[in-house]
Length: 308
Length: 217
Image (cartoon, rainbow over all chains, first blue to last red; front, side, top):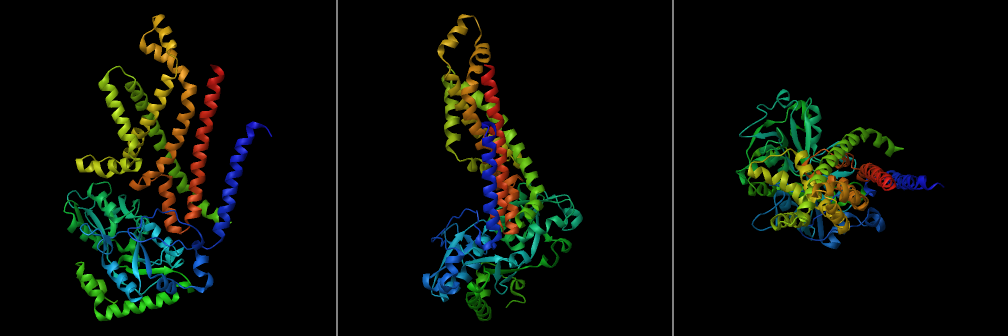
């Protein structure tokens, strides 16, 4: 073969091999793939079992948690639901309290696997983590994870700069053509395309989107109102204002979404999910859920309306 | 095949991201080469202050991860009242970082030319700038090109870090697609192929240029 063609042909052969391998991987369920997010375990080690290993031999998620005495939760920081305390450096928040109590009821301790939000759902679907917290239910997510009973009510809001707002009303016309910050992988990303000529600017965390609003990089952010209120309270230098709810034409029924816990789909997680739902119902009935919310200053009656 | 249909659906977005990646690379590379050359000259200067400033700049910037610099430029500077658009911050940081690498590449190439060449040029009455331009630099090209090509390929790959500051390059779109399809293997494979093509074409072009230059000289 002429040397001039050898290298390009070798290059194309390598690409073809990669394509072939990827096609094989794509042929399997999404839970068989790997995810590429970086992991930074704040505490505890990460269990890296494959679906085959976890499912093989009939071990269920509940059995695994009870035998290892560890419940691994994949989550991204969303204060006041889960965050690292500045003082104690430990993970705190409503979800940490709830899941910590649930882990305790199973005779296990909680292990946090901190990930970018976009990676948390994938981590659960491929069994890198046992559970993820604080996610909205969407049709796409329902294909790869199983949801618990609803845990919390949210209101998704339009967050703008308090000092120099680029948007003055929470209407579609006011938001048209604007740069709107969201969190990568979050359900709010799907709302922006419904605003004419708006540009979605995705960040790794809600706090980054708030920073972008505060510095004028984006005109508004679509985030749950509780996040903005908490961050504003903690950081007076953040110049934010909650303008109102995301327009219904953009958010649809998801204008007032609910938060769920999620586990991997299938029989592997069935018994675990039954236990979790029973725990959530009991926690609601006993007032524990409300007390956890109150502890983190989430005192509005709307949070648990229709849930407890 | 399912994956090809998926790729077909997302390809326009990925190609738009590729365009941003190329623009970012071009802007950063232009800054890196220009600033790198000046840095190399400063490092070789007889003036101690200039040498010191250049050395300090190289040591500090080269020892700091690019991601830290990008985040500092994007999130840190606004605290001082300087709000740079994401693309400007990213290309500026990448240019400044890679200027340290190109500076050392250029310095190595220039110092690799025998002193006899400079002395001969001086003996012929050539000015220092003419000596550099007509005698020294042409001889450094074949020495500089291989490491410069490697650095350029590294720069292309490092542009993927701008996903952290919401610049809509190829990695940004790949990450977004993976988070909505929950098929990270498929999405990042496509991004990987596009990055490979960019780096391969870049190194191929530079290699052909190096070969042609060597033939002529």
